[in-house]
Length: 413
Ligand SMILES: [Zn+2]
Image (cartoon, rainbow, N blue to C red; front, side, top):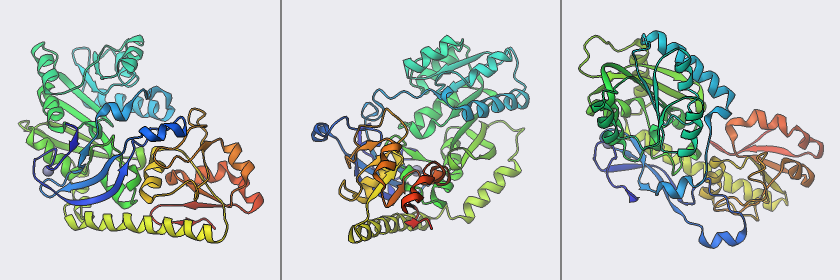
C-alpha cells in the first residue's frame, strides 16, 4: 500500500491528468526540533491527479501512515464549534431517522466520543470505531463503547454476524484519510441495515478548486471528493445518495446521505439534483477543469517568487504568520528559503522554538515577530486573513504590511 499509485484507488482506471504537482515534500506536520534533524528528514512526492473515468481526485503516492501521524493526537472535543455542530446533527438525526432505544448508531473515526455521547443522552445505543487507543480510552471514559480497530469490510462483516448492524452510520472527515477506499465503503455497505442511512461529511472539492486552495492537499488526505466522484464509488458498492447538504465547515463541506441502492422508497432530493447541476456547470466532470487548476497553481508560485525577489531587491524583511500544515505545503512548493523568510510566528507554544518541515525556518512567538518589526507579514493561513490582521494590527505602527499568497500574492493596502 505504500509507494506509487498508478491506478484509481476507487475504480482502477489509469490516473490521467495532474491537478497539482507540489514536488517532494516532508509530511506537513513533521516539525523539526533542531537543525541536526534535517539530515534524516524524509520527503515524498505530493501530487494530486484525477481519474479520467470516475473523476476521483487522489494522491498518486501513498506514504506509510506511521510516517504521517506519529504521536500527534487530536481530541475533537477541544473545539467548541465542532461540539455545537455535533449536537445539532444528532438532534436532527434522531428525528429524521426515528432513532430510539432499539436502534444502533455507529460512528467511524469516532475520536473521543463526543458526537456519540449526544445519542447516549437520548437513550440510543451507540458504537464508536477508532484505530487510536488514546482517543478511544477518552471515549470509554465518558461511556461511549469504542472498538480500537481500523474499519473495513472484515470488521463490518464480523459485527453484522454478531447482529450488530447499524441503523445510522456516521463518518465525519474520515473518508479522505482512507487509503483503501473500496474496503472502507464495502464495510459501510455490509454494516448498514436494509433501511439504514449513512451520512458522510467531507471537504468539497469544488471549494478547493474555486479558492485555488492547493495548499490543503496533504499526504494525509489520499482523496478529494466531488459529489460526482462519491456517487460513482458508492454506487459500485450498492449504495445510493438521496440527499446532500452544503456546510460551512473547512471553508465548504458536503454532508451526503446514502442508503442501500435496493431501497425503492427514496427519491433524489432537490438539493442533490441542484448540486449535481452546480458541479456540472463548474466543469467537475471535464478533465480540462483539472488541467486549468494545475496552471493556476503554477501562477501562484510564480507570483510568490516574484514577491520575494522584489522584497530582496528593496531590502525589505519578510516574516510569516501561522505555522499550519498548509503554510508548509505552500513554502516547500515555492522553494522559499530562510534567507527570504526569516521567521514564522505562531501562537501554539508547542511549535515555538521548532523548525518548519522542509524549509527549516524557525517558529517564534507572535511577540517576537512584533519585536523584530518586519516590513511584510505573509499570512500563511490566508483563509483566516481578517482574524490575523486584527491580531497583528500593531504592525501598522512601523508601516508593516500584510501579504496574502493565494490565489496570487496580494499586498493588503
Ligand atoms: Zn476512478
